[in-house]
Each structure stands twice: as structure tokens, then as C-alpha cells.
Length: 149
Image (cartoon, rainbow, N blue to C red; front, side, top):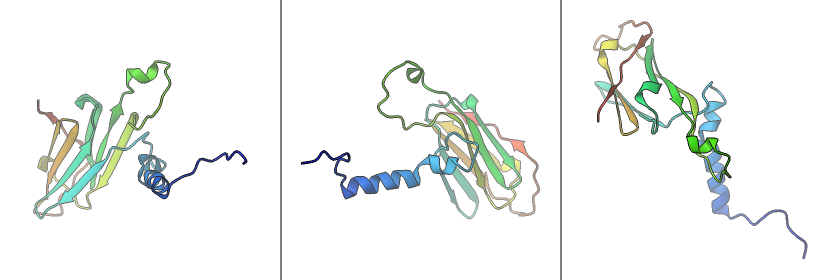
């Protein structure tokens, strides 16, 4: 019996590996300056757009939120955990560190006064009220993030 260089792989294991590759943030970071991109949900009703961004382990001070015409820009830095700096044997790293950026095209111009943001339990929730008059113009504007304890 010859020694095989490859261990047998189950169909389920192979499917999971392919799924992980296709859905990983590393695929999207190829096309941006981000080291990683946080998971983001966006949904819309008749009166508002809601954005939820998972930013666990990041201080509110490290997050910047701005509006550039029709684009909502969320960026910041997740500092690497001190444990990683110690010379140890790493078994698995899935958490993204370093600079991140998400740009969400809202497709409509938003009045800066109609945006609120709240950061709680590692989630940034952004609520954007749709303007009644869709011709509102807006230059770049930074948005303040409130923190609830």
C-alpha cells in the first residue's frame, strides 16, 4: 500500500471550504483598501433605511461614519489583540484586524439632519430617514455616533 499525500475529504467538508472561500471578506477586500470588511445588513421601508454593522471589539472612538453624496461611508480600525503579538503557535484566526471600510450606496441623496447612529454591544445601528423631497443635495459630512451603556 502506497502512502497517500492527501487525506480523504468528505463532500460536506469540500462544500464548506468552497462556501467559506466564496463568502469570506478576503474576496471583497481584494477590491478595496480594507484589510477586512465587517458584516453589514441594510434594509429599507417606505420611510427609512436601516444599516446594522457588526463591529465587536472596536472602540466607538475608532469608528468614523460619513455621508458623501449618496454614499454612506463607515471606516475605522480594529486593533490587533495583544495575545497575537506574543510568539505563540496559532491554531486559527478568523477575526479581521486593521483598517476597514464599508461604502453603501443609498441611491438617494440624504439630508444630514435625518441620520442617527447608535453603537451598542458591538453593533453600529444607523437610521436614515428618507427625505420627502428627493432632490436634497448634500456635501460630505461626518456623522456623530452615540454610545449607550
